[in-house]
Length: 124
Image (tube, rainbow, N blue to C red; front, side, top):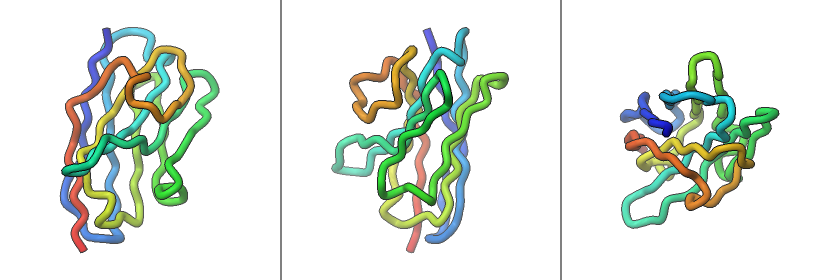
């Protein structure tokens, strides 16, 4: 069993930055591929970025490439999402998710564990 707790959300002006963190409890964090998803009001949950358990390879949604960076610290059981050059369309609840041994796939149903989410609001 893995529990995920996100933090770092907030209100920021367009062009600003935020750093989200996702702390995982439980063992074998290094065996989990981690993903960040987001869900805006009235929209489906969408994949933002993922990082694999094995070699740390990453998979980004096109619209965040060059602006967002995912990283993980297995010693701290934490995955991070650095978000720069934020835009109003990035406004959403951001969720951290984990799947055992899988690749950083962009399908929410393939992830086994989810955090409670953290709100990110970007004002124009």
